[in-house]
Image (cartoon, rainbow, N blue to C red; front, top):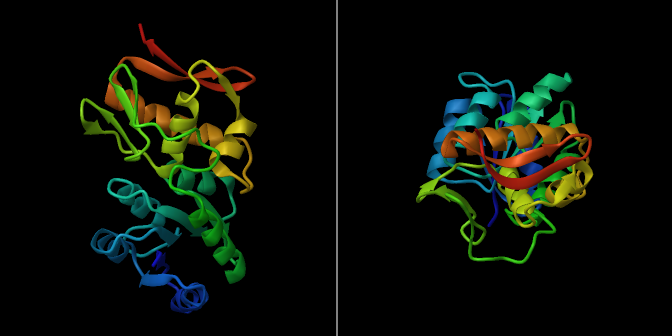
Length: 231
């Protein structure tokens, strides 16, 4: 049974969301603070987390940041804030989607269903290969892992799908619209979400691999996968 962890300090909201998800056949875990949420996520790993931004103890941003150290569960972040910066910060630490309060429980359930219908590696991906090797970088689609000399480079589900898409066609330029279609599917986002995830992916690859550049910006067009040493 698909497991969803709902995290919010508003008891009534948690109970409402829980009732809707249970009605759809999901197993639902609940937590009312960030520390308990992380403990539950480690003990009983969820497939998806509905995570409030403003929590006692650890806020949603920090919970998401720590969650990404051991889990690639999808994260839908709930926020009462409408400023773009809050959404960007949430996405930058690994959230996959967000909803602004107040929201319709039916809309939340629809987003949960849409997200869980997709395989972890996203939509419209190339045929599965055992692995791809680019210098010290190894991309294993079957295991859903990226490694350097056997050490795992921790990526979110979206970051992995971006890397998988770009590396399937080295040298080919993908526009932001094409990456949105392949990685985010029929969900609505503007082009900026691609830039945010690309920046996070680059940072992780550069931290793990040092003087090698894998994702190149083609100004005014988009991005391509290239293996280059940085002089």
